[in-house]
Image (cartoon, rainbow, N blue to C red; front, side):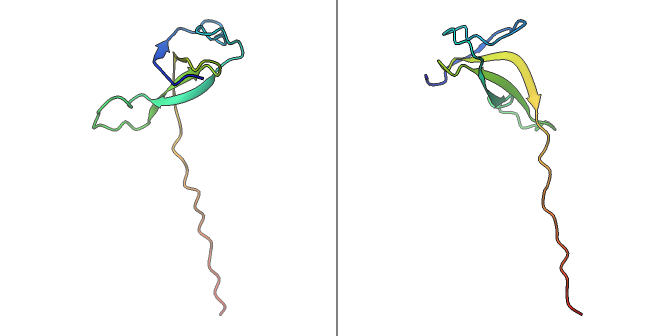
Length: 87
């Protein structure tokens, strides 16, 4: 696999599973890149938005088909246990 290079913007049709670069036919891996990763913006948005990048597992070509996602904030999973004292 090659080192990640330029991200190619491409329009996905009814199905996008064949790599235009090498012809690999079994679909893609995914990665997420923050939309604000290249911007020096002092204003923080309420939710981080990520670009979904498709990566060919055969040749490493990367594609942006225009999908954007957000992830929910992680919930605080700390549970406080009651401490029992003998009277």
